[in-house]
Amino acid sequence: MSATAEFRMPSLGADMDEGTLVEWLVAPGDRVRRGQIVAVVDTAKAAIEVEVFSEGVVDELLVEPGTTVAVGTPLARLTGTGEQPPPEPAAAPEPAQAAAAAPVPVAPAHPVAASPIVRHLAHEHGVDLAALHGSGPHGEVTRADVAAASAPGPAPVAPPVPEQAAPGTSAAERSDESRVRASPLARRRAQERTVDLATVIGTGPDGVVTVADVDAAAANVPATAPVTPAPHPAAPSRRRAARRSGKKQHEKDEAVAKQAAMREAIGALMARSKREIPHYYLRTTIDLASALAWLREHNAAVGVEERLVPAALLLKASALAAREVPEVNGCYVDGRFEPADHVHLGVAVALRGGGLVAPAIHDADTLSLPELMAGLKDLVARARSGRLRASQMADPTLTVTNLGDQGVEEVQGVIYPPQVALVGFGKVVERPWAVDGHLGVHPVVVATLAADHRVTDGHQGGRYLAAVEGHLQRPAELDATAS
Amino acid sequence: MTPDEAMGVVTDVLHHIAPEADLDDVDPAEDLRDEIDLDSLDFLNLIEGIKERTGVDVPEADYPQVRSLDAVVAYVARHA
Image (cartoon, rainbow over all chains, first blue to last red; front, side, top):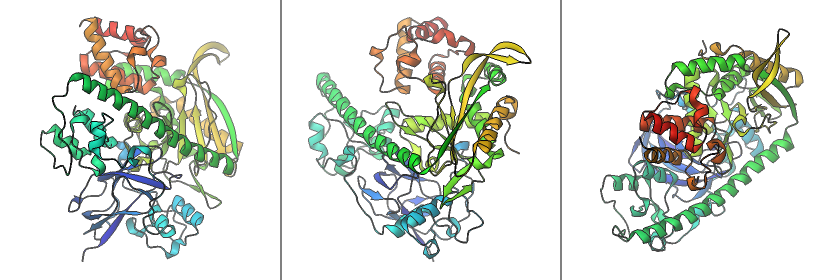
């Protein structure tokens, strides 16, 4: 007997209610395995690659690319899924994705298997968790289950962001010398394989160019096209230049629209944070002389690829300290703090041209510095190129914002609900510093903590910052992985 | 490597790191990090890109010598 499962629109952040399906990366009949990326979803903040957590065969794709649906809406049906095997760590080389397959672990005290975020969502929507059938591993109730229970059926909402709204045909657009419509993934694949998007026939809806189209073009295999004109391979260079500048203008317009949507999403989250969370703020100045000396020696001894940036040390110290002062690490849900038993460290990443995302490095406290550095580089690259994985958007338990590169000495931030703290680092500066009654000049950094006064007060917050400081005085220990 | 070739490589690497930046607008004598908003990871990517494309390894000790676009190009041309 083979079971069926539904692949639903995931929630990719505490503030996400809906997403737009951009592209399917699988088709009916394809076999999928756990952790495989099957779709690209656009949120107000970014385009995210979404993994599936069931094994099986794609039976039917239920939602068309270009459609915006509420979180929890079934997107596809899978068959042959059978019993859900227990989540095992993926064998991926990137440590940032090592814990990708496992959702937030179950808090043992509660009868219904559901993470704090899910319980919060259920509470908000007046959904009785006990009445739900969980579609997560071991019958755990997922966010999608709750969302589905509170908003049954596909709910296509307001028109999706402008870049997908145009109902016009690709033929009209193409000959208008306007931009080529392609999914972010396809756009990037075209860049990687040096394929001129303008010459690719799009087989997606409305002639959108998909990844498959780009790959086909790169392999010089004609893709099966429903109704599209032949490209103009012999276009004079002037026409092509005009098309490119027309493209550039459209790209700029879309970027602006995207910016506005992201700004709104961030604004809503920050407003909610300030409304709901009674913030208090602490600061401390940390001597980085030992840490940076250690770093200099380390970097001089290894190749460019293994070079570490100071941020890696700051992040590791922040993660380790969260273990020692667990009151800053977790979620505030249902009027109660739920400490997390892992440290998924959110890293606030500024996007080029504006905007902010804060995806997580999983189990940051257990990673060696090279692993953490690799995770950080991957995260930032993905965030900036709009290629984040759904598993990286999985809720961080504590976030760090590091504005050191901006030349700002100190940052007092706004906590990302439902987290209960935000760690801030400013720029490393040289300052007069007293050691054993002698005056010298040391590189120092101002570390700040914004914390939820419902969960901690200045004493615990102070202990946390002291722990961060302590770890940064013992840089060699930062490199160790957890025992 | 000639300065022109070096400029070609460097601008190419920068284009991948900061695709929206217009390198014609950049003041080549000013600190690149300010001119096109590079942070420490971007800068590291630049160094890695240069190593990959030209074989030139810029050790951390030499970072002060590669602050501006002109300085980077000159360094690469000198060492490649």
